[in-house]
Image (cartoon, rainbow, N blue to C red; front, side):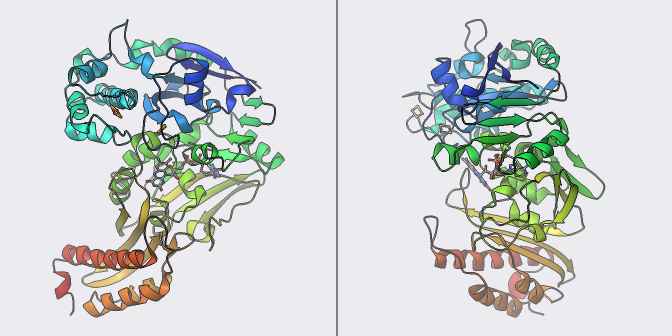
Amino acid sequence: MRKTIVFYLNGKRHEVDGKMALMTVSDFLRYEKSLTGTKVVCAEGDCGACTVLLSRMIGGKLSPYRTMNSCISFIYSLDRCHLISVEGLKLNQELHPVQASMVQHQGAQCGYCTPGFICSLASMTEDAKLEGFPIDRKKVQNYTTGNLCRCTGYEPIIEAGCNVNLDKVTSIRNLYQDEVIEKDLNSLGLESVQIEGENSLIFLPAGLNEAVQFKAQYPDTRLASGSTDLGVLSNKGKLKLTRVLGLHQIAELYEIKEESDALIIGARASLSDLENASKSCFPEFSKMLHLFASPQIKNSGTLVGNLMNGSPIADTIPFLRVAEAEVVLMSTAGTRTLNINEFILPGYKQMQVKADELLVSIRIPKSPHRYKLYKVSTRKDLDISTVTFAARYLMDGLRVSEFSLALGGVGPSVLRMSDIEKRIQGNVLTQALLQSVATSLRTEIKPLSDVRGSSEYRHQLCHNLVLKFFDEVAAECGIKATEASV
Ligand SMILES: Cc1cc2nc3c(=O)[nH]c(=O)nc-3n(C[C@H](O)[C@H](O)[C@H](O)COP(=O)(O)OP(=O)(O)OC[C@H]3O[C@@H](n4cnc5c(N)ncnc54)[C@H](O)[C@@H]3O)c2cc1C
Ligand code: FES
Ligand code: FES
């Protein structure tokens, strides 16, 4: 059993013990290493000033370098990783081509946001080299969705991104000779890591057996995945992490397997990987994930974390509920599989999970059904939903032969609307049906009023989303919704 966290930072090996394991990565960089290029502004994953790049050893190899928010990530999660801060992007004292382009296009005024933008744009150039795609305005905007600038205005930054000289980019893999780092990190062997601090215990098991044994021994242990929820709670003082179980070392949990009848998503698979993997089998879900948070959050955050956080406005839960997804839970007693609609219980954050269980994967069955997934938020990107809507349906001419509906943001949990489903299923799509559904929604949901919207506003949104759904389905059937009355 190893007792220290081992990782590389800008090509240099580091080994830290219990005192620092629960420090945020941004604090470690700034206060322990004096790498003050990494800034902290919001400390909750929203602004991107703290963006760094991370590559993790999975199955003996370093993964592609991806951005993450260092303000909500903890040092223990860096075990067997290579972390690159903005200072690490320079090559032999020469600016990285992204930095050179930012200078040339005057992409900084106060400069506080600049290092984060540079890391995000550097991750774009990494992917462009790896995958061979050309850089354009849309790509630059997508890669910088998680970065806010308050003074330059985005235009010069976008210009800088669009004009990076890709020929001059040396990929980080080559810059730091990743084979040498991989050799060293592989030489550590795959053993569990246990870090004890004054009042903390962190366990990073090498395999699932060790993980479930630890959970059985310490049922109050906090499972940590990407920490995009946990990190925010901890920074806001709403959660004190003391005993932590991280599944970061278990390579099989990073897998997303597409089988003939299902997509199976491991507990540690990132939302970014899921967005890619679901493109062909669940395109509506992939599109929805495109609007989820930012690249930094999606590179760390997981589907399992989104489900287990249990928020009534979690973006993936409405889809999982109508898709009849199955959750696979594991403990020392073995494995059990539950349909998500049994797993989620009525009430705020209530789930059928035992104290000694961990969630190891989610299985989404394939089927001939079609989906409509809508997210309404105050702004399009990097915003939390006010209301979410997921419908799964099959049409037989104008008859809705099968129909499932889930709504988020209208109750203490994401709700499956079974009464409305019964009204619609088997019926012909008509104006009268549409009107009766819209009317019954009034009595079936009781949304709260909060900063994101009043109860009345949420009622109106749901009403409008039902109309939008019928409009789109009618168009698919080759008619206008107003004609759908025969
Ligand atoms: C800036 C920002 C933007 C965001 N935008 C969105 C958004 O657009 N839409 C949205 O839905 N969410 C959003 N979120 C919330 C968050 O990113 C997601 O909920 C994410 O999916 C959480 O995954 P994670 O791996 O980081 O979970 P973690 O923070 O690691 O964990 C979340 C919960 O799951 C539990 N858990 C983790 N792994 C397991 C396991 N294997 N078994 C059992 N329990 C487990 C943890 O104990 C914890 O209670 C946002 C968060 C931030 C900070
Ligand atoms: S400081 Fe704002 S995202 Fe980290
Ligand atoms: S240059 Fe000041 S915040 Fe962007």
